[in-house]
Amino acid sequence: MRTIVFATGNAHKLAEVQAVLGDGFRLVTAAEAGITEDIPETCATLEGNASQKSHYLYDRTGMDCFADDTGLEVDALGGAPGVHSARYATDGHDFAANNRLLLRNMEGVGNRRARFRTVISLILGGEEHLFEGTVEGHIATFEAGCGGFGYDPLFIPEGYDVSFAEMSADAKNAVSHRGRAVRKLAEFLKER
Ligand code: ITT
Image (cartoon, rainbow, N blue to C red; front, top):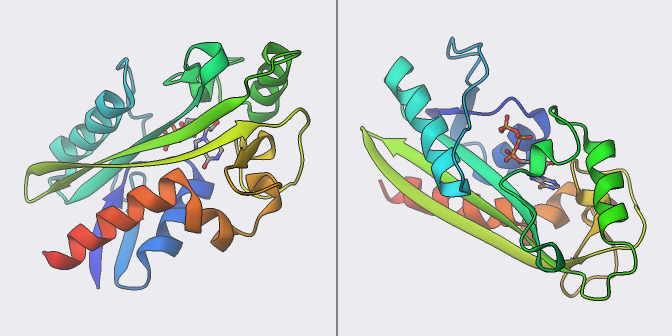
């Protein structure tokens, strides 16, 4: 079994990624690798933030590691909340407040097209590799479901009439931004 450090403080994400990577990989959190402070994410792009987080970990642990950054891009809002998705309504990760603000900003808006985009930065043997996954969909007019996290109750993936929060974890992973990006990561790791 291969050990790899995942730079996240989000337990939901850790569970989703472990489920996609499977038993061949043991994921260690940043905290378990001795990094207990918040890892800085100060870049203006998802790519920049993922890379900043993986380098931060690698520089301090020397271990193979990866980090992801995800944004919800809403066309009618010019791509917002995008890279600011975690801190859309407040400074913290207040999912309920973020969803309320998104619904308010989308009141009366006809074009509800949106996508989740995930970028993963892997550092393996000191070399960086990037992987991306997206899922197209639209923003619902009300919240539905209690699975998943973040904007899941408001995001309806293309081809479905239920939100991510109404889908099982496996069903979400099969089509989601993160599922797609992590499957690319897993393929790459298996070839190495
Ligand atoms: P870490 O940086 O500690 O990994 P985070 O919650 O900040 O955790 P991201 O930066 O990747 O994670 O994501 C930013 C926000 O985007 C996140 O706080 C959620 O509000 C939202 N988000 C990310 N992935 C999501 C998903 O699969 N479903 C719904 N919302 C998601």
